[in-house]
Image (cartoon, rainbow, N blue to C red; front, side, top):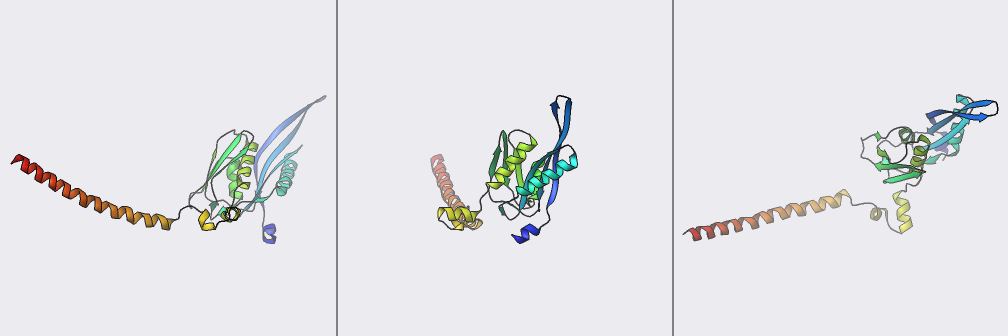
Length: 204
């Protein structure tokens, strides 16, 4: 935990919006800021701030994000499994990707994933495009991710039993299919010769 606390947190402003409050004397304008912070390893947080000036709104959002930091379960350079994050009318699908794919995401979702240390992932928005709700849906999905060790402990199984079929099993199945192919060919050849002989006899 000490190493995580000493890591430098980087911040990225996703959106700044001007809002107005109507009062008796007219309108009072203020600014809202949506900020993402993370160490680009496995910790990320989302914050929202509001103030009369932009710098103050950003600083408030950063303080709020520091209170909401959490750790993303990862498998190599991607996430552990596919999940759909939900918040309000927002739906964000997060899907693991092979190494070298990169972060395939748009808008603020990319900021959350990059600052969270996820290097290979596929993301797709399935609902509203409201930036605040999209980012909160992304955070919801990342928080609900589970590690294989946690699932194995909950089910009383080993980690190998929880994981999907590995490459070794696929390789063991491959030779059987290859071995079956010549058998089919050898069976087909006598049938052709018998049919050919039968046709010759019929012609005679």
